[in-house]
Amino acid sequence: MGQQIIILILFLAAVVFMGWRVWKAFDKRNAGGCAKGCGCAADKAMTVKNQ
Image (cartoon, rainbow, N blue to C red):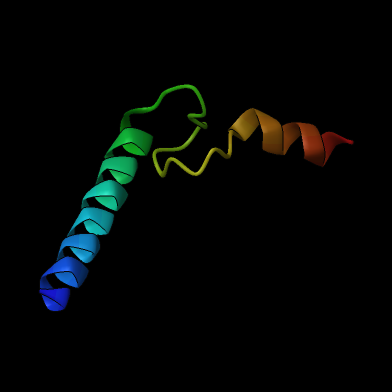
């Protein structure tokens, strides 16, 4: 019984992680200028470079 609970917890953690990754892929609020989804925008880089 204990092994099944551990497997269930690991499975649920994996589902939550994959759901978070999908959410971040489609979340446009923090989208940057590149397709990587890292939040780095080209205009932010230029602003820092010009200062």
